[in-house]
Image (cartoon, rainbow, N blue to C red):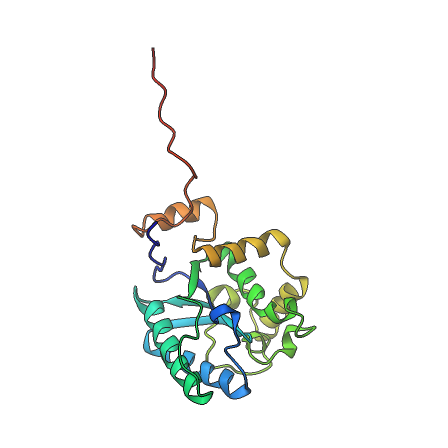
Length: 232
């Protein structure tokens, strides 16, 4: 079966994940994380992609990003992927592939899932048992969202700004959201959607999104189509 083209629609937030081949380590030293962050900042600006949240793990990374143009996100990811492989192979005197195929992504319904997806990304190191608190992990945008440091890679989404009328109110509200964690159902849906490529949202959102693209945005029913019964 032919592989569906990646679902990318400008103006919508996209949850992106890129893994190392066979889940191998893609960041060995602090310099590697820093190089990737510089790459992302450079290419996001070049291709007009707003990054709202990110986390760089040892063998993969997540982004929550909104492209402004049709090819913005794919072009950014291609440029980042190629440049980082050249850097990594040269630094560690290796050759060959680094990534587990092409990146995976899904479109996220802002009103229903954007803040949950941000929290899902920021809580990744906690779920992995690397830290007890997301603020203890240095390679994510969580500290920026909490006002602990300024991260030039982050462009806050409008829904983050709506969390409060002051920076303190927004930071407190987002911190409470992350502290509460994500329900099991939402966590499963966020994970499943980014790996499958199907859009994440309610029925009305899916229907409206489908109007903007020729590519199918949600999984169809399995099996043969049901034929109408004959009337005798």
